[in-house]
Amino acid sequence: MKSPAVFLDRDGTLIEEVGYLDRLERLQLFPYTTEALRILARAGFRLVVITNQAGVARGYFDEGFVRRANQHLVDRLADAGVTVDGVYFCPHHPDGTVERYRTACECRKPNPGMLRAAERDLGIDLPRSWVVGDRWLDVALAAGVGARGVLVRTGYGETEAARPVDGVNPTAIAAHLLEAASLIIRATRNEKLAPSAS
Image (cartoon, rainbow, N blue to C red):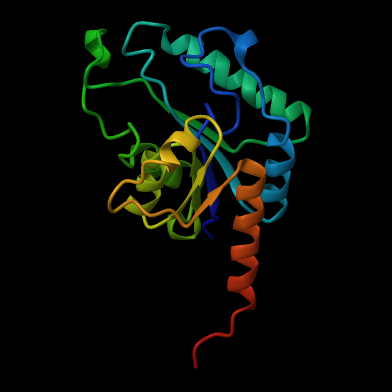
């Protein structure tokens, strides 16, 4: 049986937004990140990190560094008792300066490539899943696969919330990841309690 997931943007959602993260010591979890993820995991959601990393295409760092940074994040969360089920990143950008990464790909959010890969690799039920991020492209990504999207006001989220995008409608806007987790749990509980149609 397929499982629902919460797909989590990395920079500005799980960790502090620092521009292009290029050193491990700059990776700082928000103080509520582990609690939010524990809540979601206890409710039966798989936890999957999805992140655009255009810094590779722009030549700021290589894929190896992104993998090390992602593993560092996973290890930090594991030390706090949180298991991440999958991590996917897109190194491409259509305006990249590194030729091999200069492409309009299917994996760069809001395109669905990373979610489709997780669906295949992890047995994810996308229509029962959520995407949480600090950009409208995260919300658009959710809509594109039939999932639900939550915009958080951390990272770039406050600026994004002030500039709505026509046709991109979040299920909710939350102050931060912990509030988003509470909203997701409440919505899921209400659905389970709702009477079925006769």
